[in-house]
Image 1: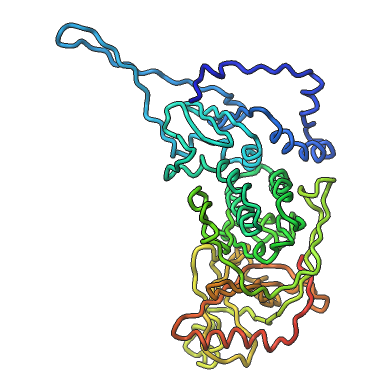
Image 2: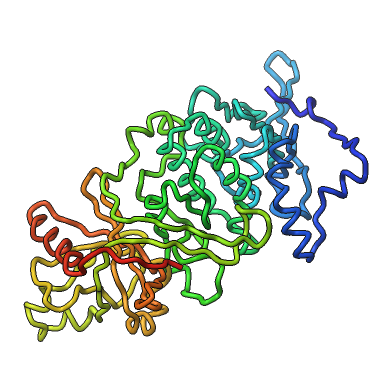
Length: 450
C-alpha cells in the first residue's frame, strides 16, 4: 500500500535546458503544433506522473488541508482516552476529482505507466496492475468493485491492449471515444490532438489508416456513432472536422456496435457482446485527411471519404400537416413514423420516401447530429438521401442520412443516423417498404462524404 510518507518529497534533477524543451510557448501556433505532438511520448516514457486530481484549477495547487477531528473522554475507571477520526471519504463523488473531467488529462492518464493522484482528502495510486488509495476504499486489481468505473479507465485500457483481434481493438477505440467525448476541452479544435497519442498507440495494433477519428479497416462500424444529446449543439458553419466524424461535435457520443461496457468483467467476455455486422452495404474506395502539421493523428485541415453504396431519396415534411384530419390515408401510408428515444432531437419534421412508395408505415429512429429544432427552416429546404450502411446479426439496419451539397457530383454531408424498426407482426411489410426504396434507386452510386 502506498503511504504519504513514501512520496513525501519529489525533486527534479534535470538540467534547465531539458526543462525548457518540455515547455510550450504560449500563443505560438507553430510551437504548439510541434510540442503538442510530443506530449504523448513524454507521458508514455515517464517514470511517474504526479496529478493534482483534487484541484479545480492551477490556482489551487497540489495539497489540501485535512482538518483533524478528535474525541476525548474518561472511562469509568478514570482512564482518559482520545479517538482520532476523519470524515468518510466518498470515492463516488465526481466533485472530488475535477481533473478527471478534462479532455487532455484522459490521454495523459492512460499513457503514463504510473500516476500518483493528489485528491482532496487522500492520495491514490494508479499503475498498470492496480489502483489503491490510502484508506483502502479503492482496491482494484483482480477484483472489481461496482460503481467505481472512473478508477477502471487505466486498467481497462491496459487489459484491452493484450487483445490484438480487430473486433476487440475496434471496440476498445469506440469505448475510448465514448469516454473521451464526455470530457471538457477549453478549445474544441483540440478534439483530435488530445487523443493523438492514444490513436498512435492503437495504430500499431491494426492495419487501417486513421482518418479524422475513424479507421479504414472498420470504417463502417466507425460511422455508426450517434450523439446522446443533439439538442445542446446548434448547426454551425465553422469547420473543425468532416461531418462523418464524431470529432466535429461536442458532447457525449455512443456507438451501435456494443453496449457501453467500461468494466473489466465485460471486457473479458466482450467477444460475446459485440454486435457483428453480417451485411456491409458500403464500399470505401478512399479515405483522405490533411493534417495541420506532421502529426497525422492531430488537428486536420480537411478530410473526405469516397464511398459507393445504395441511395434512397427521402423528403422532409412537416409532421403537423400529416397529422391533420384532412390528410389522406394514402399519404399517411407512405409516411415513415418516428419512434423517439434518447439521442434524438426534437423537431417538427419527419422523413418521407418519394411519392408512390405505398405500404405499411415504417417506424424508425433518427439520431440527429445537431439540433434540428434550431435549424428547422433551413433543414426543410434541403435535399436528402438515405445511404444504406449495414445490418447486424440481429437484423438491425443502419443508414446514414445525408444532405446533398452537389448531388450531380456526389458530394454530401452527414446529418444523422437512421435505424428502421421492423415490428414482429408487420416485419415483412416494413422490410418491403424499406428495401423497395433502395431498389428503385438502381445501381450503387459513388459519392464523396465531406
